[in-house]
Image 1 (cartoon, one colour):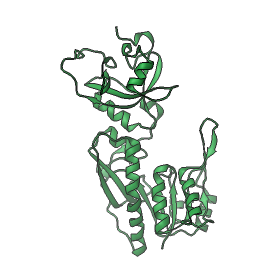
Image 2 (cartoon, one colour):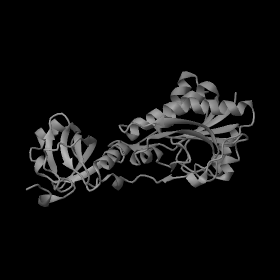
Image 3 (cartoon, rainbow, N blue to C red):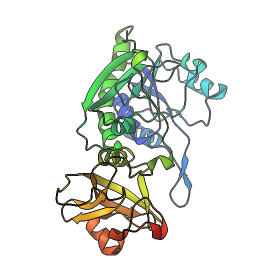
Image 4 (spheres, helix red, strand yellow):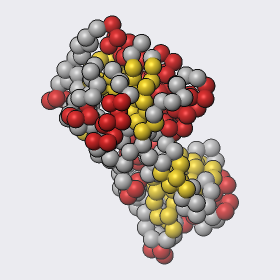
Length: 331
């Protein structure tokens, strides 16, 4: 049974920690420090730290296992890792880059779980990137960790077909569930002897950047399909939003509407509300096609289905989305 240090922080990493704790000996957990949360701003442990403490209580991890929560990976942290005497590191979304000094602490090396079909979508936001690009498939990859981000040899990989309805939240949860047994199997291979991975073809690599809050703003001149992908890719964060009547409007759910030929919306300004479909939602003209809005939320209010939303905002059909103030109204 290998001695494993697990490094991870968000909820998507928890299934991998749970699976490893039941298949190998987790001798240390490395995660980000508690972060402010909620209205009070009180520090809250990362999901991985909370899961590690639960696993300790359940007996899956030894109660004296160190949970290391540094701001930076410095010499003191490396000394603490070394005291745990890990054979290998398993990582899923830790949130910090490992340098050569840290990687040298693991005799069998380090492996990383990445929710994409590497070398496609290297970087920190591969799930939203696949949805934004309207990829037909994505996947989950276990790779040997290398100094260049997400460039290591592939040990295991599983494909995930996409049907165009996934959100970043649902797809990441699915990928993380599939990645847990894939990681356990990969670690087991190291226990049996040297593991040879498959080198990535760097010429085929694509990259994704960290998401910013402002990335969620909807450009209604884009196509309905592109806007629908954006809404799904940015759920739950940073969230897709627009302005309407001078206020910020969050769009949680929408879909591309099959345009009714009888509608005379061909010349409508993108962002114009061109109709209400009792089943589909609020119909909005885009740069190419009609988008049906299903779930909406004023920033200071709660999320509502489109019928409840219209009941509370009766002048909404007169607004032009993406425009502020009085100029943002249909006339």
